[in-house]
Length: 326
Image (cartoon, rainbow, N blue to C red; front, side):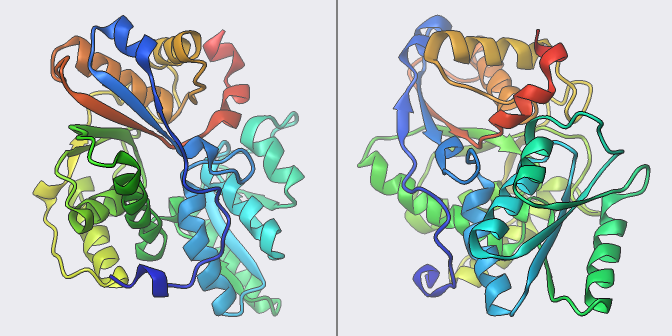
């Protein structure tokens, strides 16, 4: 592969550690549980998007951009990390957020403002429509915007998780992990992990817990992941092809929809906090950990397995969900 040849800006504190979760494992009667701490990547409280942004911001700078534009929900972890990355390298940042302005911003939205991002609200309109509109307005004003896709999930961004699998392979030092479980939404993390697994020879199962009902683009999610993985493999110089069957996606824990906290998320957040001092978020990692706990309880995951939970961050959003978590 040619990962070392790709343009990259150092934004993340790497490698992120791997911790054991012995008390949670004991509570559940096994299996052995590990957690890969990408909540500790370091950029404005960390998260998985920082790995992607190392490559995306590098491309923006190489193209002579003077600003970045991206979109997400009001409590988007991706938008918060993009704003922080832009600030780190001296680019301005415009965020296109769904919904209406808040009189009392909290969580990620509060941090977006502290990081200097200009925020454009879409109301009832689709964020994608306004994303292109804001970028067009910037060009008309003589700016040079670089558009970062939702979640940083294109081949450039997903390369960060190909590299992450190389990092994991070195850290495991021969320890056999049967499954990797994580929250899957825009697809870049899952596509990158699967490409990286092929490159490193990792033979465990890579299971994305789907956290939102909407499909990425116009295609079913596995088709989207396949296209993204093939683009990523070509981008990093890996001679490999992928098909929808290469992607394991669990749709059982969608609950009432994106960002709606139910008992699954509440219990997972409380168990991780009280047993391990591990902070999960209400939208992504709380739902993914809730799914993992349920699969263990139902015997889908056996007590003799070793499972790695990939923590993708998102802690600031907790403060916007006080009523749902109280």
